[in-house]
Length: 175
Image 1 (cartoon, rainbow, N blue to C red):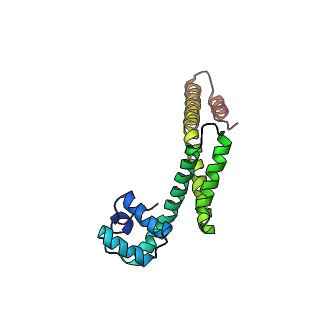
Image 2: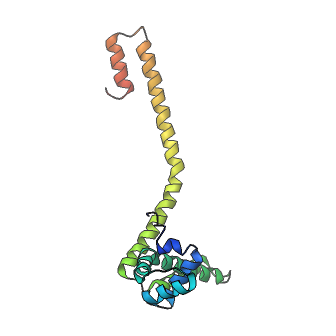
Image 3: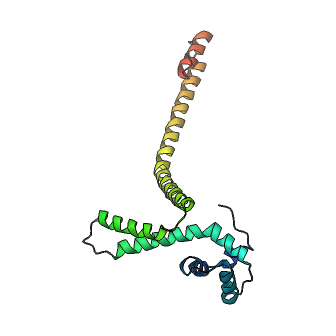
């Protein structure tokens, strides 16, 4: 994601609490962009037009709604008694999550799915990093071994020039 412009409403609201307040006005109270712009001016003393509020909602509103739904689902799962099994807790949390997100547009639902897929991808990449390192190390070790064999063959006085070339092809798999 790009760096925010310092003059943007997002940056000027300064704290997550201030942004949460604005998003609650938009998504929970259902206030219009003009009403929210007026409230921002009154509460935070930030002079903005309703277009800035629209851009804030467009660029950051989905993420806020998604995070709110996730937090609500986690709170619901945590509030269940210990006797509930994992699957039931997960199912109830999922229902809570879906209930919060029901009013999303199709495009926002796709964004939510993409966000979850990206998170899973990052988890898998973190798991694969040590394996990639080990494979790269093995590759370097093999190449160093081939290099040592090639040096040995090149400096062996018992081999003729043709035999040295043949040995190099064998070492590097060109034969």
